[in-house]
Image (tube, rainbow, N blue to C red; front, top):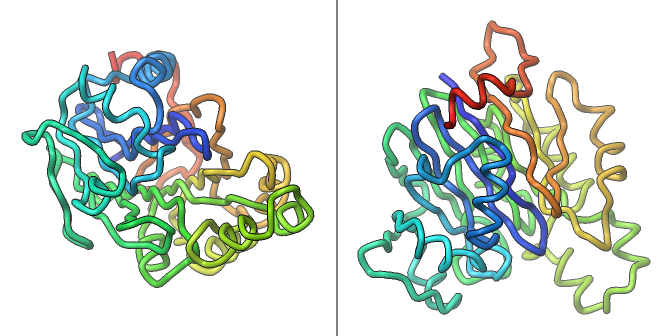
Length: 276
């Protein structure tokens, strides 16, 4: 009853998240080139041979930029809505394309992936919950607000990649033009550190072991600012910052009810035995 998760990259430059069990995995988004995805996964002891599907959240380039090169070498099913395909001008082999419906779970081997709609300035944006034997991980980024869907699924997560995009003061006083500032904070762009913290404080379940703050802005946030805001409220949840420059470690997520909460990392020996 466990999942292994890692951020391959997280930020406006590129996004890709790995969630899997011991034998199979999925990628959420494919904003990183095929070569860089392979390089980073190899560094973590992960293998693309375990990846059985790719799920695309929306059509922005930082989420689909590496998709074509990736599936050219690894022709796995791609789950993407027709609107996202059309607006992203994504051309894929027809046999690889699979659509999905909101709130309807999709079985990928022993994994279950549930998409849900969110507010973002894209044609048909979704976030995802990945589940294996009652352990649930959310990939919840690019959300303009913490809407009812976000709250509903966040409450179920043993771990989550959660957007914490900007610091309010840094955005307000920064160099972005007013129109872009309003787009970011206007309810269909991104959520701030404070908004992400309120979601965590009010709705994180007691069994959430890991929160990976994701999609931090390069110019309107810093890892230190985000971490300092969250750390006093972390409790038993380990707070991690996903980088826009390098992959995270691999984190082992378990159903922590009645067991030790602190198992944040996979040892080198165990990692090699799991993913080689």
